[in-house]
Image (cartoon, rainbow, N blue to C red; front, side):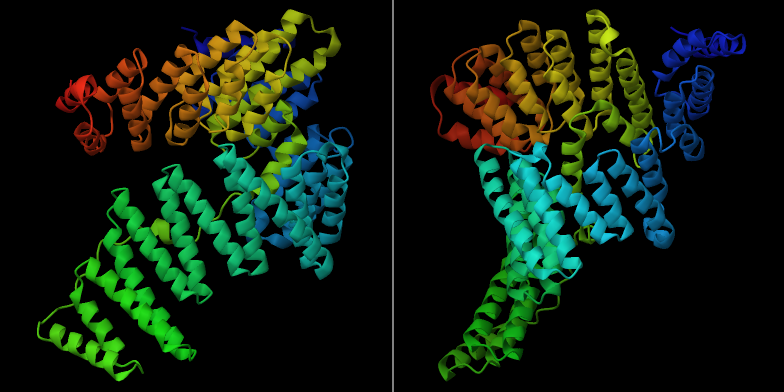
Length: 614
């Protein structure tokens, strides 16, 4: 085991005796231990910065100070005349904490960052910074420059996002016609793309389209756009079985519906939420059903207030009766019949409701205590990631590992562990740039492999684009390292690269993809794992997909394993049997019993063994 304290002493000694190159190698060795205590790691960072200053490598020293949070020292070492992109990043990092507390102090910083990003040719980031500064005219110029960028041709999704940003800026600047033109183009593009992504099984990308349409509805004050965005986001999360995200979107949409006075829509949505929570076994079915009934009350009263057809109020109150009956809240049922009796209906229907009210009045129904309420954190208004900016920044950075890691290492919103690992990626990337064409094949491959490993260690979605770019390298060793880095990136998008790796011409890359496939198991993974199982003929690939599905613990994954047990031949059916025997989710047992009732022969015996347990 390496004595890190001793390595640090050696590094300090070499630096003090003028052997900075040797000191730098030792500090780099220390900085790999990103999980060290803050006191130790910060001392190593400080020593590494002094070493780089001694070596006149100000760029590396500046990045080390960024990781330390010393923006003042980083600014001195990364001047705008030499490093405009880095200088802009430092200004942005200074401006972010002031965004809400002191916007008047933040605005000049954003403005200066916008100018430097433009100088560096980073027009997307420039436009975002100018928007933050309130410089809408300059921001529009930058977005127009992005729209005319030849690299955008063929990038339909990114082009739609640029139209979205231009449309919103034009509206804010009072240019209604231009705003409508860009917004109409963005809306058409995103709606078509969402359908296309879903048809290809890329629901996560469809979700981003719908999230942008939701934001469009917020900006336009259009309930129809909001409804389209929310309902599709809810649907996609339901299909991915992400229960608490579903509830979060339900609650946000309910809040918006009530703000817009759309009580009928709110009541229908609450009833849908009640049915959903009952289906997935959550405890808030009764709370949602009670709230649905009360929303139907409000809908009926609103129809009356507006002088609408009395039939609408009657139907709303009858829907409330259904909701309250479903949870045995007869006190509120009685109160609903009281409202129905007082409606200006034909005499026959009024008498019927009066009779029903009298029947309920014969019993002394007391108000029921409210059911278990939804946790408060699911009720609050939530902020969703601005994908219309994030995805365009990703497009602009084009998988450059240095830019991506640099944007992480100075951002205190990331954990220190992640920021330290990002510094390692940045330093490796600078090494590769410094060697340039002089780097031999072996050294080049070693550096790219190290960068791939470092990106995987970030465990951040932002690392995916650089890893995808590394996979395009002609050397199979680099492709293998890129695939292996995915084992720590639990995102649906990771499977797109895994699927490419499974069909790679190099056997080593295919084997690496197979190993990663066995290790990627998380709730979002069910769909791509099932798709891989169905699309590949190789039994080893199918077994690896089943192995991951068995570890997800999701009911959808469990049901698929049952289908494999029933309809596939050995060894696939045997693997499914073994996975179900030790399945971690006890809710699988009702599904097993249901299939047992319709199964015969060997399948029935296998299901009985599973139900008996190991």
